Amino acid sequence: MKTAYLNKWVLLAICWFIASIYFLFFKASGNPVPIPQFDKICHLGLFFGQFWLLAKACFSANITIPQRLLIITAISWAAASETIQALFTTRQGDIIDAIADLIGAALALWLAQHIQTARRNSSKEKY
Image (cartoon, rainbow, N blue to C red):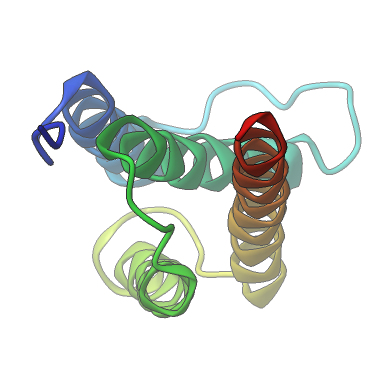
């Protein structure tokens, strides 16, 4: 019996997405952090977390990670989030933030793909 596609990882990904909307659009920029480019690290982390949770949902449902769909989603969300920040918030849209977003998503998907491949190879060796 196949695991349901709606699992705890999908629900966590939805919660993460809602939290990222808050942090990207509604949370006011506070005092600057003494770490240079800290906001880029945050963008990378937000997107890494989002796409890692989506990959974990695929692991849990025992389906192949839809790499192309998730990459297109990452590009669309990075472009949309920076455009929304530039047009509708007190923040600025920044191409470097979008690049950090995409690096975070790419790292999560790369890691997930390697883990999925290793798991499949190890299960083939058992039988």
